[in-house]
Length: 195
Image 1: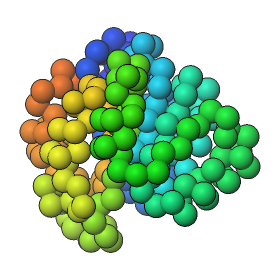
Image 2: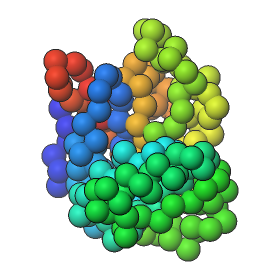
Image 3: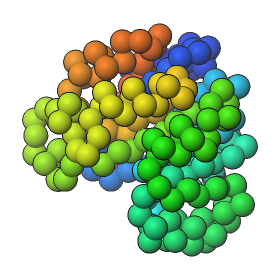
Image 4: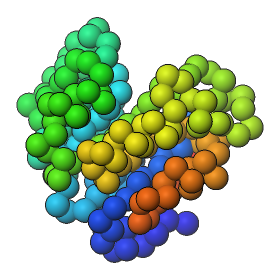
């Protein structure tokens, strides 16, 4: 069961964990991140943006003054820009080509107090779907602790999209310095989803 929204909105430090199972309803994810973020957070940074699915959903939510999408794959960025134009949200999104950790640290640092970082990091291949419990310490190419340590140097507003079988003990241990952690469980299309 999710926390009452008023409690969630009052938190200064938070981590939203979105645990994936099957197909995604991106607008639902964008809505929960938008509703959960403190009002003072007006910028969304989508790390590992890919071809823009989440980025576009965030832009369409109407919640953010600006979306920054970061992706290493230049071809994916071209597709993302094309997709954003198709959805009419290209003017709300700035795209960055490169490593998200470097870009946040060096180019977006002035936005830290206004930002929420959303990350759907690579999980290291299809093994996550067959593991009864997904080990976030061995997630490749970035482990959970490395991701959180880097993002916490920038902001305490962090939303992660992870496999639904992620080890909850690892999540609890990794988020020890945050005041609150919120996980949302969805049931969509007959499948279990946790956010």
